[in-house]
View 1 (cartoon, rainbow, N blue to C red):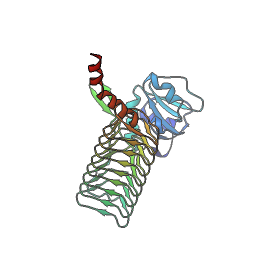
View 2 (view 1 turned 120 degrees about the vertical axis):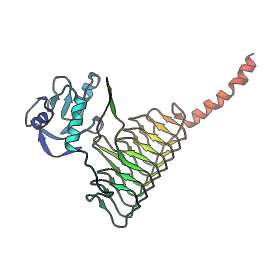
View 3 (view 1 turned 135 degrees about the horizontal axis):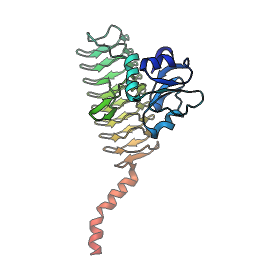
View 4 (view 1 turned 120 degrees about the horizontal axis):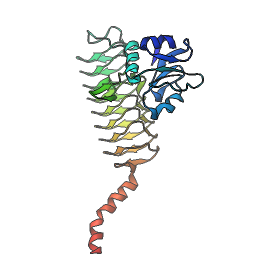
Length: 309
């Protein structure tokens, strides 16, 4: 997430009321999670296990809960609670804006696009040409939709990421300030939920088709011409490359990659990254031919035991 202008390190420290290490005029361009940070971004870290990863990342400003040696060319913001202060920044630069109409005046809707009754189009949404948005679709603020997109009834684009920090009295949510981006010629079924990124984009690539009742987690990137069948749950920060086929009731863990042209058979648990161009099945996931051989061998166990007796 980029800020509307360049701020100084001093400006951000004043906003957070925290100490800093580095030049007071050090430029700050935005804020992002570690997997999408760029030079000029703030990244937060609040556990020693991840200090090195954050300090050596592309981010040039690290919001951290301990004063440590600052890498050359970077700056630190010292906070007693980086998670809380990352939320402070999100609320300041991407505040929630209440809607009072079904289709926001700031939304841009292309020629030939049809929006059926009872749909909600939020602030600064962009919808391309010749789209069909069926009834009762909710499209949250800042969502971007390309041309020739079909979205069926009851689907929600842009809900918050499922991202929480455990506290003694409950859970604190990491506030989402990202977007959902839907490319051209995408089809999305009924009752799907696609969460926005925490600071970046959740992206559905050109020509991809998604069945009914599919969930896509925050910051996930789905490539071109993928097919995703019903009741699939895709976690956050997943990369699905081009022309992947995922059959029904598949679930994934977060932060993995599914290679191009892979086929994931129904009811598979994708517990790790997998190469493209192969078929997979089972939990934990394995190549489908190997997994099916294992299942066939399991059926032989009673016969083997009988012979052993």
